[in-house]
Length: 136
Image (cartoon, rainbow, N blue to C red; front, side, top):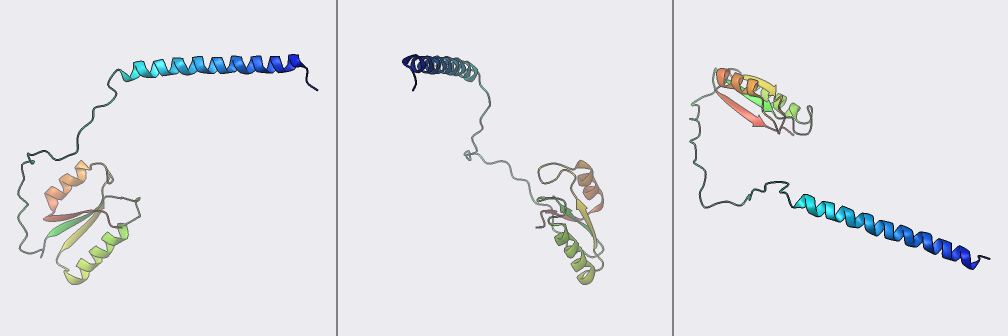
């Protein structure tokens, strides 16, 4: 069927491919070793240290919410419509049970991982309280 020369040719080709693969892997390994000698990242240890951060006092509690404005801020965790209805239901509850309380429902532009400085400034200027979180 196959002559001895065919087997020798196939064996030679496989041997050449094997040697080329070993050489290429060796070069890549040397490159990786050279790259890892330089620091790639800085690691921070999340374990608690013996010293705690200085604690700030909580804001004084409102005596009443009558005739005050509160903000309900959706952080959009799970998408823009995931939990927004919860905040709308809370606003409806205030309208029914505490009609003198003005409730503003807002979405944070920064999402659950970002910041919304404009909204924070609006809350500081206009609100007596805020509920900030996810609704779903």
